[in-house]
Amino acid sequence: MEETPIQLPITKKWASRDTILSQRSRLSLFLVPFAFVAGLALGYLFWGQSSGVFHLGESTPLALQNTPGKVTQIPVRFNVPVGDNPYVGPENAPITLIEFGDYQCSYCRAWFLNTYPQLMTAYQGKIRFVYRDFPLSSIHANASPAAEAADCAGEQGKYYPFHDKLFNGGLSLGSDTYLKYASDLGLDVTKFKGCIDTNKYQAAVEANYEFAYTMGITSTPTFFINGLALVGAQSFAVFKQVIDQELAGQIPK
Image (tube, rainbow, N blue to C red; front, side):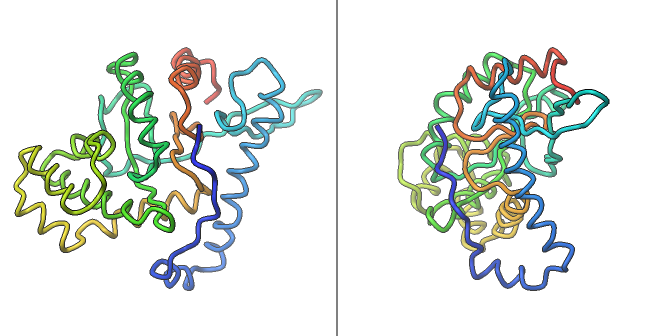
């Protein structure tokens, strides 16, 4: 089950930045989302009609490579850097799982509650999990402030405990909730509140959003398993199929 894809408008604040993009950048903004969607469609047309595991909505986008006498299916691996985003699991884990999510997204929460713990238990020591912000602010007013609050908690070494509380805490999002979670986690609440009040990490959250937007991501959650795209709050079984094949070296690099 996945968040219904929507056309994401660029907010007025970010639109001003968009007006000064070069012609090359504008071309990239057009072509990259097209390639992403086209890859998903190819995944459906080819893997979906064969015995492969990948299907539309739970797919690795595919490109085609012509060879004499046949067409070879090549999984597309997107370059999605971890950057300075915090992670859970070993740095050198064989699987890097990156989620672009939204703290107000019900499907992101469902995936966190139902699939994430199974994955981290079943593949203990084999997954480096990275959460990157993709707040759908046009429909989720609290998504960006929640993401900024998580980064403020990360200043005190509690990014993922705070991330977990945002998805699992059962409280509505808002400043009072963030302060309660900070207190529960033993943070310096005064420092934490100062971080939130000054919007210290607003630019970092926007940068994550813009990176995902230029890639063509339009819905949450969207995942990348060693660069292979998987869209939607898919089940543990779907992730397991992809991860097992990747660990076994059965998916071309």
